[in-house]
Length: 286
Image (cartoon, rainbow, N blue to C red; front, side, top):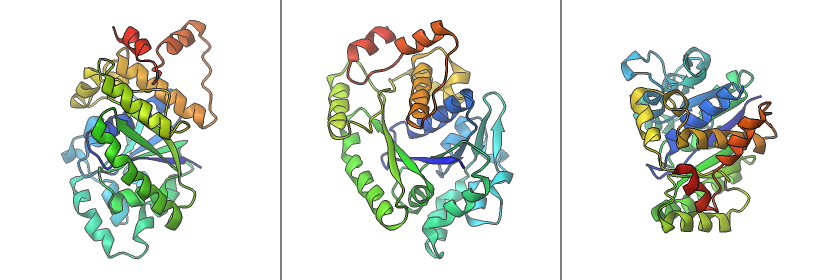
């Protein structure tokens, strides 16, 4: 059965959708068949992989609140092999429609059961809120990854998100665990980035990813071309960081990707972004 992972943070602009797209792409490149679910009414993951809103005939909305089977709405990105269940603007009203349903928190979980044997991983890109859609994602998920921006205000929402995870665990999904905390938008030029990472590490030493995602203009440009970072610029620092994050994700799940090419393995090792050593990151980015 697929492991279901929700990417959630109620604060917008922390790199959540960028992470969802590129972690999914990294896993696909490493031979793990992965489905990305765009669960946000902004449809950024959908457009970020090159699908225009007007071209979407059926979306995750039709699965969640209609009688559409999820396998019928999944699209494949030919260039990367990524599978995505696209979103639509109809999702903006989904929370209102869910409010009157029985067992409303479990709708997504029931729908995903039909494809759980078809993928190794299912990644859910949650909306930037803690409403019913995010609750549905957390109820369906085995674990949660929290992208956290390396800035002060990003820390303020972390407590609220953790409280929500605790409530979901106690009342709906007792098996939900924190898969990891991924630091994004690292700027090696500022002390603040290092201070934020150090503070998160002090509270969550086992959950925080060793890999940290740097600020990289290519990561911002790629969605405008409807591409993941590996299709847009596979040699940029953002691509190398997300590939390393994908490897760390698999390692945490007991899957080790064997590099037959020793030289490539050494290069990957050199390109690892270590949270505690900004000097290493600085040398790699220059």
